[in-house]
Amino acid sequence: MMTLLVSIPLSSPLGQRIAFVQHLMSLAVVEAVRTLPGYEDIELKVKWPNDIYYSNLMKLGGVLVNSTLMGKTFHILIGCGFNVTNSNPTICINDLIQEHNKRFRTNIDPLRADTLIARSVTALERLIRIFEEEGPGAILPVYYKYWVHSGQQIRLGGEDGPLAWIVGIDDSGFLQILQEGKDIVTVHPDGNSFDMIRNLIIPKSS
Image 1 (cartoon, helix red, strand yellow):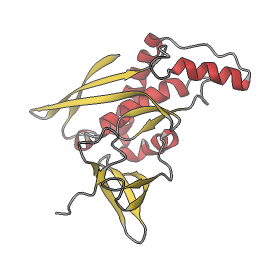
Image 2 (tube, rainbow, N blue to C red):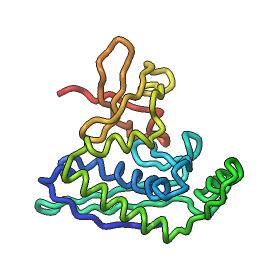
Image 3 (spheres, rainbow, N blue to C red):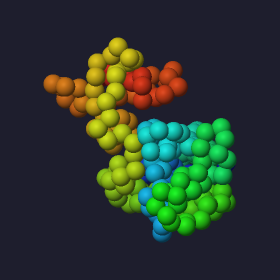
Image 4 (cartoon, rainbow, N blue to C red):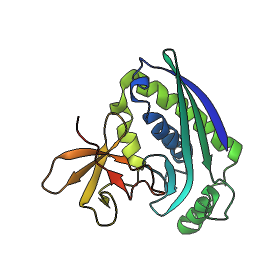
């Protein structure tokens, strides 16, 4: 639905943790809806690393980030799309609002795409400013409030891999997991999986 161009100084807190940009954009979309009065309980959530979900059930949107370092500045193209009014082929934000109205006998209005784009961009600007001023520690509590992975179990490296639990993301924006009887480690997507949570690899220590 939109592409944003953002410039981030390499020496800044976000420039040193550039992978966080995709997390901030996903969070901005969720906050664009859930910080509206009356819309706080719409079950829009973030899925690491770059998806927007209905609860933990269905994808509603996603983020793609392309960054180029020129001199001492990252020039970042953020592509973001999310279903607002189109029920097919999956589900959209206004479907969630309609279901919320039926379930709780409320009468909140459907949302317009241009409204959500504007609110998402405003939310992203605010999140970037907070990150640059206070670092990831100021963002992560809000991110965890809306993410789908609390207590989630995964298999490392595929369906036959060892069982682990997702515990959070590290200061660089990568996923942290805990295997029974072992220390918390950082994992990366394998780069080949459609669902990045299903196939994760533990990076080799240097």
